[in-house]
Image (cartoon, rainbow, N blue to C red; front, side, top):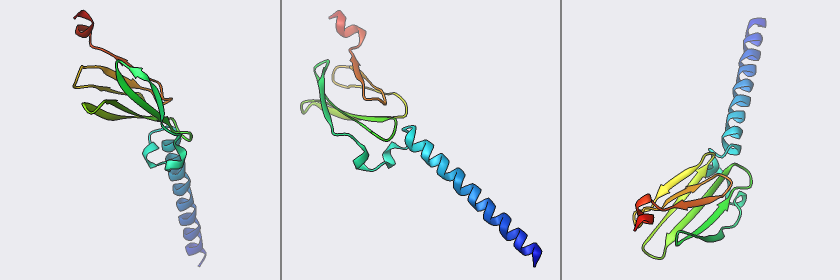
Length: 120
């Protein structure tokens, strides 16, 4: 009987250690921004209109729980896309004029035209 209770205690302790490690990894994933897609909608701030970037309309929202931001970039009905900077910088290049956008997890967005665009 003593052997089985010792095994039972070890199994319970192992399960608790595994649960604590899993919870720690899940928390790190969410709060570092990498798991931002799993966060509830209530943790996201409202979309805010940013000044135009290279004639492109931009809306950005930041997550208040983790290190994450999302941006909606559009040029009227011609082209639009969403960027997601979850824990690390995101970048995208437009098809229409080759503008390269960069979004940081804190919600800062920049755009840069390709070199040949300025030479015209």
